[in-house]
Image (tube, rainbow, N blue to C red; front, side, top):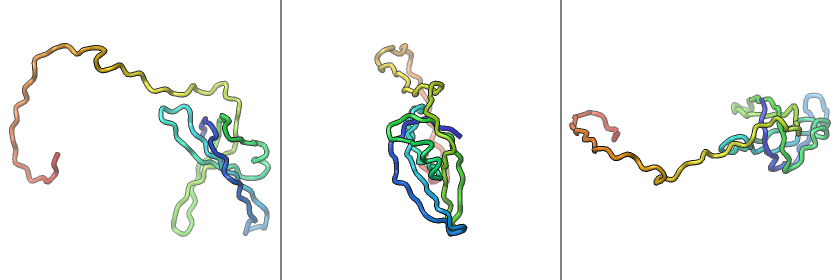
Amino acid sequence: MELIGKIINVLPERSGVSARNGSEWKVASYVLETVSDRFPRKMVFEVFGSDKIQQFAIQSGEMVRVSFDIDAHEYNGRWFNSIRAWNVDRNLESAPAPATAPSVAPFDAAPMPASAPVEVPFTPTESNEDLPF
């Protein structure tokens, strides 16, 4: 999957040692805010491995196209999502323009044509439903 947006926050890197094989690992997390949606959304994604973190060198405030995979993992009966980036591109020449809200004309811009009022007959019915609608 891909998203285009602005990096609005660079979170502190996390690191540790694998319990399986004893090798060191490093993860960096970033918050991306979409720009092509009418209502911008935010997503936290991770870059795994010190080589990828250095290669991408993501900075706060820059516009990027992030290619990522989504996966879920179970731990102690609970499920957690993982969004891991595998490519970050700064060349956004082919990026879509940000969406803007459609313009809405004022209510008095075009008056509605006059028409005769329509009467709707009211016929009460008995019902066993408790719902108010």
